[in-house]
Image: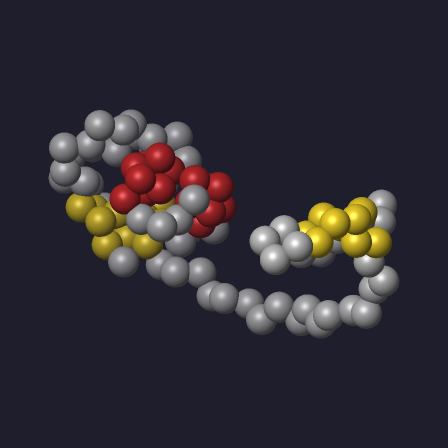
Length: 102
């Protein structure tokens, strides 16, 4: 993907990209660190302030397969109706998986 900066009202590159794509600022920051985002063909820093005429090249990150599988865990359901479910979650039970660094 390529973005050409025009009439930028934001200064930082991470904010500019987040405002003009579906990427989050934290994703943009990680991509800059991994040199997946270049400005005018050169690597850049998160603190870079975009200027009109800059060409930002974004190389998409490879999507990694998640090896998640459901577990049969007994749930303590406090309340349930057609619109809402309230669960008393066990301490330490992960409900949103995240990427672990090894």
